[in-house]
Image (cartoon, rainbow, N blue to C red):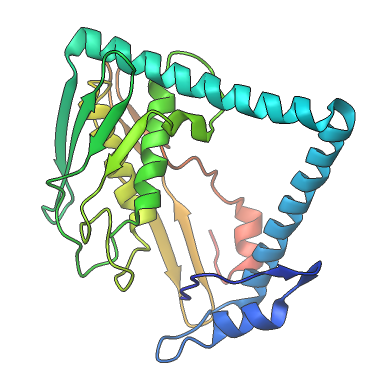
Length: 274
């Protein structure tokens, strides 16, 4: 693996292959990447996607003018903010201004959430005090994972179709204890936090809002490999029931929505027969 705090991947329009290769390969006492070719291909694809976004944004500004485009960017965020504020006001009116939930990781580590809602403004404080300490394993989750889980949950709870954007979090204040499972130090393992702990945070948020039962609580990664390659697939699981619907089996839920790799691609690129 590689730990990258910051690195300028493209400089003066040139992909910095030598620099990123050095980071991916030379990790001191820790083994570097097993498949540099795939890593570089993935990074180039991300750069290409960003360049496409830049091109499309320039076209949009050319067609409509910068002031109009900027105005609508603000309108979209303001609309999302008001949608979340109205949802929080409605919840407070029906269930009170305080919501609380707690659930546990497989090792017993708690994820605890207390939500305090201002019924006048629709602002809310999401306080994760009571969440267990960071662990020696790799299920610790940086705060960005919790932010993402909460913004997903809030958008799910809003009763209208809005684009996902930062405006959803404008009414929200976060309190996440330092050195906890959800706000660990920078020297602990976090690879599992993105694919497992994130799902548990969503379950806890939806439980606090009395929205639905917990789902599988994990992205169910099946992984295999050796010193030359690594592969993983996310496997569907159970979806929690709600007030007007039954639970489902064998479906992807919440933070994972990946499709299974085509068998032909799997067998062509990996030493595997399916």
